[in-house]
Length: 282
Image (tube, rainbow, N blue to C red):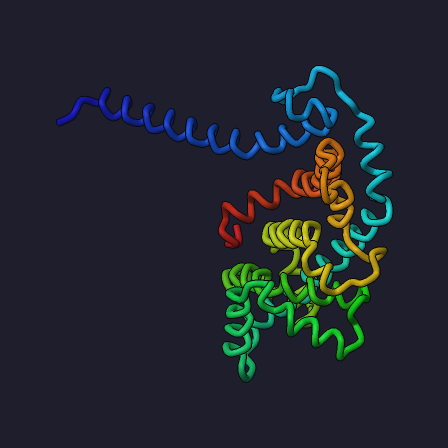
């Protein structure tokens, strides 16, 4: 029989190795972010010669020049509008659909659900041609509505899957109690299902907000009018044919990253709860 000290030593060693691994992962994630912020405060000359994360001379004016030169005011508002509209649409449609798939029996339920799941396996670029043709026929190309509808469609499959998994494990006794109190099916969804699903909804919101905020390729296909483009188009301003203004580009990237980081921190409690519970009601 092994000495108790052996098991204690083994436990401590495993704990040290686990924490060391996690520290390496955190460092690998934070380093690009810190390097981006540090580079945004350098000049075009020092960005290649000064490899330190904290520059000796900080040029905060890079953020002002990036904002003005890239036309961030217009594109920033565009991206906020697209993100809020798309995320709101996805939350409403996916939660209603997931609740229906989970609680109601209707003809073709499984077929429709698995069709949505199959859509998760189709890469977004694979749908560019049919989307372009469809939007042309509906006269929605080069319109904000056409872009918003496309982005809602992109996020539906994953969101429905996450929410249906949650609703499947939600106790039906809660719904029965609400029904006795006079709640309709829509009222149960609004007053019972959605409040309980806050952790999963937080994951859905952040996942889709990140997707919409960083989207650029689909916007290039749908929009001809540059004034309708999202924020990412502003970053192309600093990339010329012969030279790239790296400090301004890094400042622009920092500006675009801040809103998503803020959203994550505001919803961190719900995100962690949703992930750790695995979409299971606590």
